[in-house]
Length: 71
Image 1 (cartoon, helix red, strand yellow):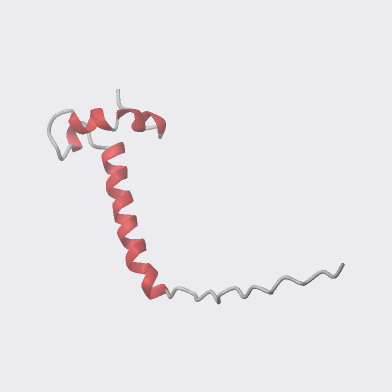
Image 2: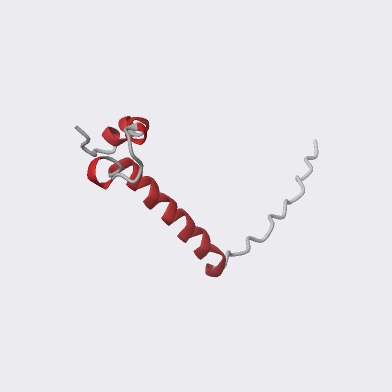
């Protein structure tokens, strides 16, 4: 029995992403993470931007999971 060779597959060339294309997205996500970190870690008490306990209750379990004290 003769075996036929499978056709060789050609993988597409990977083009690098320029730093100019990555920087705006990195800044956007960095600012987003800082805002999230503020709300999870510091949005309560004297530094609160939003009055009431709503934000505190929404992030309460995440606060403990990340090691932030809250009571």
